[in-house]
Image 1 (cartoon, rainbow, N blue to C red):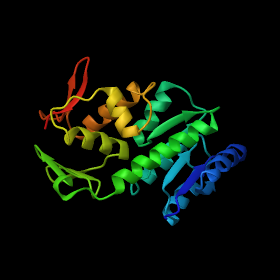
Image 2: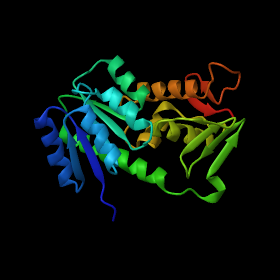
Image 3: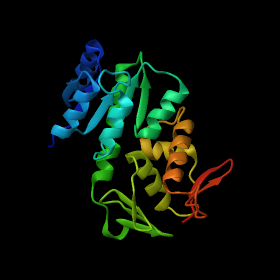
Amino acid sequence: MKRITILIADDEAEIADLVELHLTKEGYHIIKAFNGREAVQAVQSQTVDLAILDIMMPELDGYEVTRQIREKHHMPIIFLSAKTSDLDKITGLVIGADDYMTKPFNPMELVARVNSQLRRSMQFSQPAAAASAVLEAGGLSINAEQHTVMLYGQAIDLTPKEFDILYLLASHPKQVFSSENIFQQVWGEAYYEGANTVMVHIRTLRKKLGEDMNKTKFIKTIWGVGYTFNG
């Protein structure tokens, strides 16, 4: 069985050690970094299956670390930060994080979120059936096996969660998904306060698909109900 490696990047050694303790009990292999540059180097030098990042770190902050990771890698990223405002959370999700937890935190909740993110990541890394490996509509091509999206021949760089949402909608054209349903299927956990998270991902997904610059609207909002693929 493949050993799952998790990167913990936090300049507070006590927090990094606490997270390491709980994740080690789950059988995960842990590597730690205490500044942003070390975190980037860790991802570049070895295979990392999931990263837990603080935002306020020396050298490079968590936002810049995420930007650099997302240039080449698609592993889940969870922010674990003392920054608690909605703007901080939205910024983290927009630049490529998959989840956001605030400090102080419940270690067992963090473990549950790590497990959920890894389950989703492993599911989407499995080869899709030949009949559904590539979805095409209106100049948009979604390759589930390669985890890539092309729009009129140009590659579109999506975060893992943006890809998952788009693939979910595109593989069920005309079916309407509520925010709750999208959150449960893509994040694989109970809904609670996931509406804003889904809304932010839909907004950035639409922007990357150029919906604000052309007439093609791949994702249609059904007011009061949810979202549907309109390709």
